[in-house]
Amino acid sequence: MLEEKIEKIKEDALAEIAAVESLAELNDLRIKFLGRKSEFTNILKSLKDLTEQERKIVGQIANATKIEVESVLAAKEKELKEKSFDFAAEKIDVTMPAKKLQRGHLHPLTKIQNELEDIFTSMGFEIADGPEVETEFYNFDALNIPKNHPARDKWDTFWLKNNKQQTTDDLPTGQAGKQQERILLRTHTSPVQIRFMQTHTPPFRIIAPGKCFRNEATDATHEHSFYQFEALMVGDDVNVGNFKFIAQEFFSKFFKKEINVRLRPSYFPFTEPSFEFDISCTVCGGEGCPSCKGGGWLEVGGAGMVNQAVFEAAGYPRGKYQGFAWGFGLERLLMMRNKINDIRLFHSGDKRFTDQF
Ligand SMILES: [Zn+2]
Image (cartoon, rainbow, N blue to C red; front, side, top):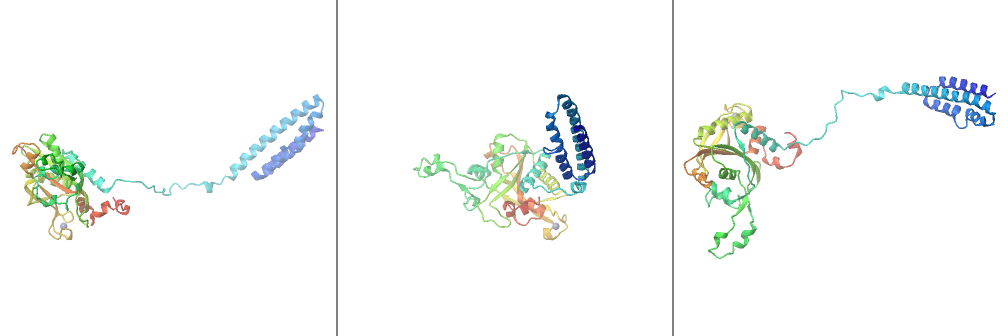
């Protein structure tokens, strides 16, 4: 009887499925009982030889059996999968340090420039900007630098070829007035003072950070390209005391400690009076130590009261305004604070250096 055969197949299948212990064995059983060559499939194939009534009865039994065996197979498969899940292998150690991602960062000079701009703007200064390619007028003439000053020498300044000038050089005398002005790579940020004054009326206080160029051999303290910072404050009665206060405020904020400023008489064409200024040693505070060679002071730069000739060149009436101007190198400032002994490191492109900032 087909019904009995089917019943026997079902009993065998359920018993064997219950005893199985691996997914591979379970798959073998699936083929054995329900596969194309299984006894059960053969029975289904032989249904067509039965009478219609028999086919109906046996067909229903076979169908119900197939559904039952399949559901038992599925349940067993789920059970085996859960049992075989390897928790140890899948374990995640959430305390393990993450892989370090390589990220870019700002260059130390950009960082220090941002820092200085923050300090100065907090004291009411505006940020001014100017071109790196300048004319002789803005770089030298307007700043009261004499025509024969050694700074104009080709060994100190990068003069640029002005293509329009090449032909006018050969013009007969009398037409010399048509000559194009000579151009150069600015040797300091001071030309920005003139450009700003030409378009603004005092009172104002500005800073002008930027790149400068000098035609000179490089060594541990000299570079042909470097960054400068220019500060200019102009008004009706701006005086040396204002400069000293602003400078002390600035250096105290920059070095994050109380810094004193000392002025020594000096000479610059664009300021009168002019002075070199020192700051109290950032290491010993003025007591004297190897950093300041025992003197208690560190040389920082030059400053002075704007020469009236400079005001005149910028279009202001002589004697109407007073102001101070000072400049210093960004690299030098960072070298002082971070004990860097070679200015060439800044443009070396050496990541071992830049990554330390
Ligand atoms: Zn010292």
